[in-house]
Image (cartoon, rainbow, N blue to C red; front, side, top):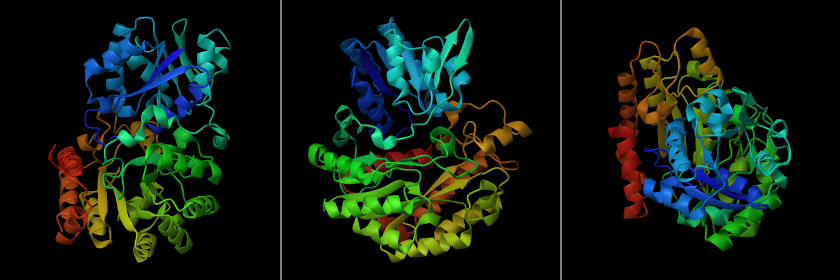
Length: 460
């Protein structure tokens, strides 16, 4: 059968990266089926290009990736897909269907026929078997379907041995064609590709969906698999920078060391960055030395707050003293540091937020991102807010940082957005910080992407 996998993106989605999750699924599916991948963002979000590709490829199955703020766009594209391909099976997967299957099925009806929750490298091929007359719905992990007017939901089953998965279908997503400003906005070398070496998160940060989506058990790829992927990307696709986008790359030190030593031994002239963040408490001198030797020029960390009181409420298992200590250690190794902060966490005051802003100015950071708190579906903090009546039914289309979907009691959304703008401007308009970042701009095209991001974060 013919399968088209679609990354929809959203209107404010200027973080355009190769769809790694789709590439993993495509790699398994094409063992038995003909598979194509369509990144709507890379098509300049042109509806006519989308419908033209549907008509050209004529897929039997159209699968949409769906993050929470994308559900409206998935609905819109599904309507177009149904009009072009009335007999095609339409399925959606990804974070939002995994977290909120009943809500997703209701919102995507009647165009969407099925949902696949959780990791789908094993379940999607089983789903295709069922479409071809083999197996049962009940035997497919994470499947959601309608039966006699009721919605049936199977439990998800994380893949135990991710090391056994085939490498992503990089040839279907062509990472070398993606723009220079991806996950981390800045870069050292180009082209860039993201990879993952682990899945799962054992931590319990109250605002994060990672443990729900990928499970609390950490699963690892071996160094042989990782270096084979890096060498493939380097030699076949011309990739010169690798972004390791694990949630917890440095949590298992032996795992991280084994991979870093293999990268060093390969002698590939690549750059490494960790734009998705590493857990700052796991970093030590030995790890940082190896990261530097392997080509690491940038590490991102989730600091989140400059207030011990707020960090405790977040269940971050961090404190300000430890952050200062680890940041100083990273600086001593000559590795640039970027940090994430959250403004507007439940029960925060304006004074608490200013404490975080001031803390960011005290640290030797190259960059800082100031996100407003997002009440993501099914997280402990969101469930608590719903139970207390502080929030009701969420507009998930608004779950992007620029729209400020939530503000804590006593703070208006306009105040919070103003504080966010203030944080960015105070941080980046300092002469030294501005100069250091300007020297990292690689081209006029790169400057254009950065200007677009500045507009979305500051002006809109």
